[in-house]
Image (cartoon, rainbow, N blue to C red; front, side):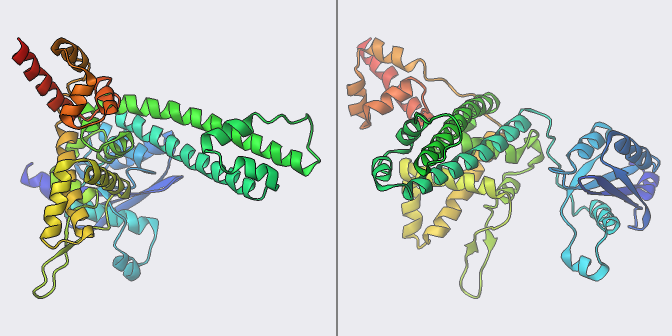
Length: 410
């Protein structure tokens, strides 16, 4: 870029809302040039683009809410070749000094783009990850609704007549739903309280069963999408569909915007924060970042702490060093974030497990002998061979051992 273009470059900021956006443009010295308000319609976006392009040499545009109200305008600006950065909400101290209006917020966004304090690349929201995000929104909402209805069903049973309560309360949720959904109720509005109770239980049970069928369908579709996008992430120890889909949504359709594993750790809220004082040197938990991604890393850490030998050894070593359980979890989540970052930005191909059963048959081994050798259950061997939530680390060791057994018998 020439000296002249640097001198005359201008910067824009957009304060986004549901029904309208406010745009402000500042020059290279931060002086406000003009503001503009446009509706969030096709005509409004067209007018906003015309107004912005009337300022020649727009160097950068800062947009608030690139993942919510600003999704459409961000995508439109990027398609037109503008450099768009994500802007956090304005500094509260500045708000107390200058007050708050949409024009002031747009001007603050433009100055953040000029100063470089806003440098995060927005998610693109235009690929398979966006489909995963929408499936997750639907599945999460439906799961909460199903849980609420199940709780209502149980609460109604608590106040039911003793004979009905004694029969229904010990049942598992699955058995209870199928039993109550089969109640026979006469046609018409039930005037009798007992009939009304049975009608309510039947209605709730049928709604819950219908939602569970829909949840199973959504979960199956979500699993297929995650496996298609990043099978190596789903194959990592302790990473299930919920955790994998959450982390994929956090990274977005353009994970290259995460320029380092440290930035991903900060995004997930697992980067250590200095909390030292005097001779006491320590770090504390980061309470910022994407809390859903943080929760996904916590789930992975808890599963590995129970089922993974290396993780148990790591936890024991850090505990001996004097770390508290909370500090050990913080360190563990940070290590997991480093591993997840490499899987998100450079996914490795995952070998299937459909070759394990033929290898075992060729070696003339029974599942029981394999289970005895690895000190695992028959179910583990069977599920690994059938690719039902396989542990790919164990599958690799199992394959190497079978190959060795074949070589010895050859």
